[in-house]
Length: 632
Ligand code: COA
Ligand code: AMP
Image 1: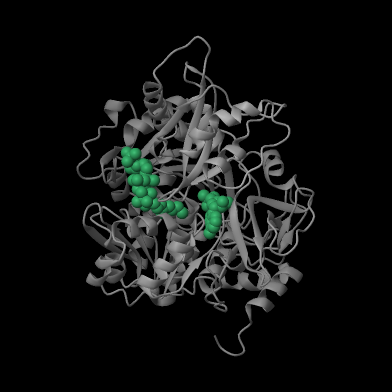
Image 2: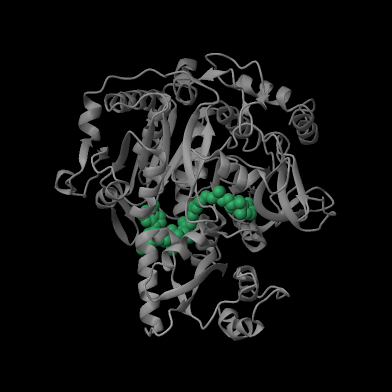
């Protein structure tokens, strides 16, 4: 860092005391069609908008402008498939051309500004191409993770109302092949739009026949061959770029809206200041385009910054072994890797002494970033020891789109502390409050909340549902956004994130709703009521386990019921729920007002301190559950 460079502390203070000035300055890194003259406009319901009078095109900023700046031949995207043993690099020029032509394909299907395009795809380059092409037209994409089942896809189709759906014939998982078209067909039926146009990227080895399934299929390759390239369409900064559905506390997913202008400004700021990544650097995020991490840091962030992004189809272990990540780092000379702690735990479990690392030269790696779940201190120390680079945890969520708390490696690398994602990022006025909204003392745990306005790039609302946005995030504490996480801050201002305060759980870095799983279990004819909780799991951080009470007079062998419930959750939510345990119990512990004591159950299962609320209806119920919970 140059001696005259601003310090983290100065930048943070400036962002809080003068947010408009801070972000208008950051906005200069974007190529605007009409530069914004104003920062945050509080008037726009429900929570104000950033850069309301600015106009831009996000795809232009991610692609064309790098070509115009003379970097057309630089690799923009490297697709590395450990599943197929293939690698393919796309230069900025090539990717721009492909995206422009696929935008022409979408336009020919009637997609225009503001229309929605639903993308249901695995980790293949066409997923990123479809996202960027949608953005090029000023349309709005909604990517659905491939591990979700037809019902979850159907709910998203119904809510987003797409003009077209983009998918593929197949995905590759280590133990099986994923057939996308039957799931797509079922989802379209369920959503009541069986004839929606479906653009299909056929993959070798999948002999799928869309016509036989009754799909209104359009072949990706054939359509692309005839397509007229489309030019970038300017949109208002406040127009939506995408909708990304995430788990809330109920069964219905929340459609998090991301705008164009704030998103580009915030991601550009983070690439330089948080991740220390600039033009020409090779950056790898090992996540999936179905999650926010994939949106922000596989596709948009690195491309906006003119870096080279690695898109990886594979797992940390088993494809073929626990050296897969080290192979990718060596082969593509990756400067920084961003992954979930679960992936590191999986590698450590298979190769505790990192013997496989010796086969590779990972000297290009300067930093390892982790997020998605808490980075436990064992994994933090292990990764730091075997890789010999800083291991940087950072905390954020789908709603914010970029780190709330992190360690700004490009601005001023701060000392790292095991167990903490470090300090609040500029723009996030983080407070820790008790149930009444009062600030807690240093080192005391409370609700993590953020002062309004939130910085650019964070959600302005939920799709089609301003009221749910207000109810979910703004109504608990006036003037603050509720993150749903709890934690504390130590005397140095370092934040420690302890876990969710609601019914959201985190399995292998995947955010799930216990409420949604309960809703599915509740449809089984033998189930009178149920509770699903997330209990600690050594590999995946948490796992979802269910407790069911049978309808009176019914008898079914517990093992048979468990099997049926596991299959039901897999069919209705998808394999990603990874639901494997359902235990039949006599009764569920409840308060006198009928609220199930899920938190107490989780605390007992995790071996944490717990107090049974005095409002419990029948204390003997919890006593009867103790052995089951303790054996979890
Ligand atoms: N499409 C279809 N199915 C998928 C899928 C996808 N995109 N992703 C996962 N699944 C399936 C898996 O095949 C598996 O199915 P199975 O029950 O038939 O075996 C199930 O969902 C659970 O998958 P996963 O959570 O990946 O568990 P795993 O036991 O196969 O692998 C890890 C364990 C640790 C290797 C894996 O969870 C992992 O790589 N975690 C890191 C996750 C991550 O990067 N998250 C980032 C979010 S920011
Ligand atoms: P998602 O919206 O899928 O990104 O999940 C967001 C949630 O994951 C957060 O609200 C946290 O509960 C959890 N989470 C993400 N990153 C971290 C982290 N670094 N430390 C602790 N929890 C995290």
